[in-house]
Image 1 (cartoon, one colour):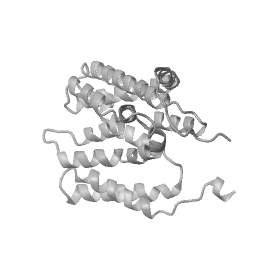
Image 2 (cartoon, one colour):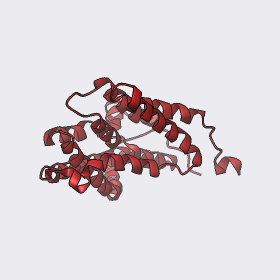
Image 3 (cartoon, rainbow, N blue to C red):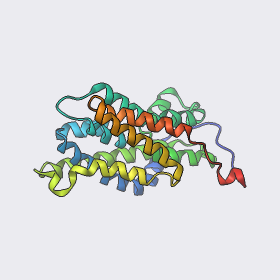
Image 4 (cartoon, helix red, strand yellow):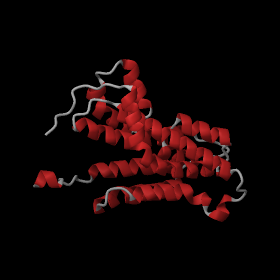
Length: 240
């Protein structure tokens, strides 16, 4: 059994390997980027604003959620709270690899996290568990995902700008379909109906009785609290 590498190193060769390994998965990111570009234009953002959001935020789920709150008057506090809630998982992801990255110089350590996302983080963690010391998968994979996310957004901006009525093609429901796909792609467990059901009911109640846009935060908090109360099921490894 391989023991995890005690420290990390980062070099150009490792970054290039990370880019090459992530390339096949990155092609699918183009599709989601295209959907975001089209949806952003339909919500009133300019092409430049959509590109800047993808370049600087680089968080698909948060960007789609932000579009749900976008309008003539932007609710800033709900927007900040929603974005933080969705991306809070990065706190745990960063803590999980901190012992590994602690051996890198500070500049390399913190810039490596700029392009961290779920996919390249998971592959980098798997590499470390196999004894790999090079952080190239985290950095190179993140660069590949970031570039293809930008490319997809650009395609969405180009094609979306020529669509006067996106609802005729069903493009006005892209955001809902994207979030629904995230739900279906999650863990297949009946216990997950509890937090999702709590979030849905709380959000509907907030839409009926609370100020506009508060349903996003209320639903997220209700789902999170309900999820904490659901007892965790032992894994097969633990019960074997």
